[in-house]
Length: 232
Image 1 (cartoon, helix red, strand yellow):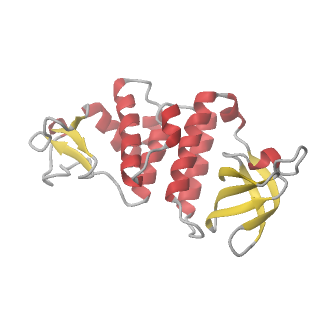
Image 2 (cartoon, rainbow, N blue to C red):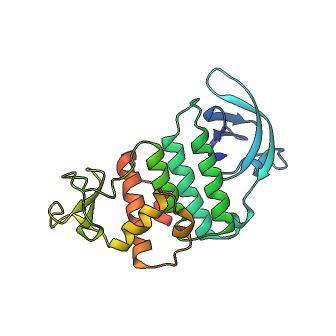
Image 3 (cartoon, rainbow, N blue to C red):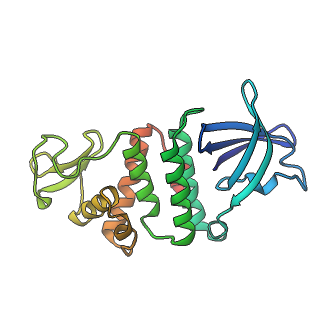
């Protein structure tokens, strides 16, 4: 998967890929910015390619790239394209160079295919929550993240990013972000095997809340802002 590109010299590009077997890889695509280049549009962010590289000391060199899927629908809809960019940016910050992560690769490809075919409101938030879970930041949703006590769904009324999950009535102070119980239902569906049901949820205040929380959570744990989030 092509995550991002930057210009190099007058005609080349440095392309960052998430690969199935070697994690994140950066490589030079020589002549990619020339008119009629054999790479050209094949190496745009969001493209899914079969790749052949010559391994270099610092940067590899792209010797062959064949398109597997360009997710055409994403490129025809501005909203869907910006959503895809947010997923690519998050993965670029999280993935480690040369460290194999097949689960992350498959999750990204699957999320982009879903967004391309079924642009539901929760595709990106679901991806971000699952990304956090994969990276070891699975939120606590059945017990209070502050006091550790089990609580009924109606008693979990807040979300504390620093504590890592839902907070109960007693541990949610006046300045904390309060969460509608319906939003917690959607979060549980996303993270506990009910993803299909969550993606079928129509636009609503609880869906918007899950979207907002997903961005705040990913930015909190990455310790940086998602530049593409401003376009969402």
